[in-house]
Amino acid sequence: MVAIVTGASRGIGKAIALELASLGYDLAVVGRNAESLKQMAAEAKGVKIIPVVADLTQVQSARQVVEETVRSLGGIDLLVNCAGIPQKGPFTEVTEEQWNEVFAVNARAPFFLCQEALPYLKKSQKPIVINISSVVGFKGYINQSVYASSKHALAGFTKVFAKEVQPFGIRVHLISPGGVATEMVTKMRPDIDPTELIQPEEIAEIVRFLVTRKGNGTIDDFYIRRYSGLAFD
Image (tube, rainbow, N blue to C red; front, side, top):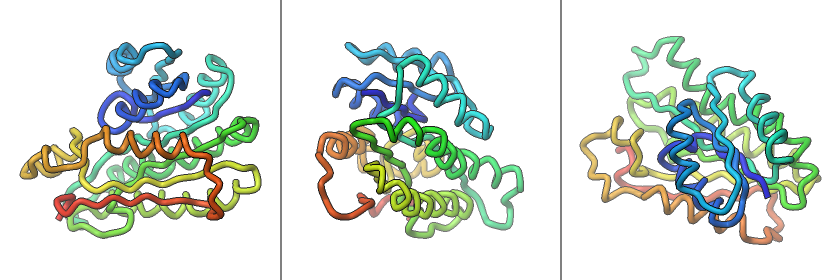
C-alpha cells in the first residue's frame, strides 16, 4: 500500500505519516524542508519512504508530487491532504498576496492533488482520500477570515469530490479538528496551554481508524468533527 501525506515534516502530518508507516504503508512525505522530511523519514521503520520537496503554493507541485510518488513507489492507494498555513489578523488588513498564499495551500493544492491522483486511485483495491480541515471550516472565528474561508472551501470541495468518485469505490473523508497542539496553533494563540489541546497523535489515531475499517456504510462521504472549546475562541 502506498500513501501520500502532505505537510508531513511536522505536527499533524508527521503524526499521520508515522501512524501509516506502522500500518505498513510505503510513503511519499511532502513538505518544503528537505532536512525536516529526512528526519521524519528516519523515525519510521520497516517501510519505504521517499521525501518529496514541493512548494504547494505552486499549482504545478500537484503533478510533481504524484509523478514522483508513482515513479518511486508504483501507485497510490491513500492521499492525505494535511498541509496548511494559518492567517491571523483583521479582515481589513488582509492583502491579496496573503489571501492567494493561504488559498493556494489550504484549498487549491488538495483540489489538484486529488485530480492528479485520481487515475491511480481508480486502480487501487482500497482507495482512500483524507482531507484535514479545521473547526474553522464550519464555524467563524474573529481575525481568521482567510483561513476560515479556505477551510470552508476545502469542506465544500470534499463533499462534491466524494459524490463524483463514489462510483469508483473511492472513500473520501474530512477530519475537522479543533485546536491541536502544533507549532501553527502556538503561533496563532500563544495564550493557550498546549497540554489542554488535542494532540497530533489523536488525529493520527482517527486516520488509523478510517483506513483500517472496511467502509461498508451507505453514506458516500463521512465527516469526523472534533471540537475544542479552547480552539480559537
